[in-house]
Length: 121
Ligand SMILES: [Zn+2]
Ligand SMILES: [Zn+2]
Image (cartoon, rainbow, N blue to C red; front, side, top):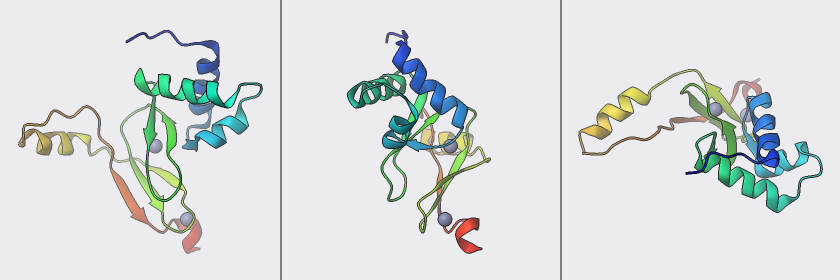
């Protein structure tokens, strides 16, 4: 797998690294100036392939991307659709449980669903 990152991909990666949140491809497009839609999608695919970012399909919204950092869980609000980071690392537990069935875990995604604090207020 080639690790070379194009200037455009680096810009896209910069947006995700800086925001530290979960953005859809459309939201990323709005934040990068002068880069075409196809180029942004290609950059997202490439960055996902080389493990710099992750593509998460959560809740009702379209897939979101995030910069890969320390393991954490997610909370998806069923009312507003926002995705929150939850600072809990359950990857070890999941990896061990999967091992019993002969699976080898690459990475783990744990998601809680419910109503967020903002929507409860
Ligand atoms: Zn909410
Ligand atoms: Zn996250």
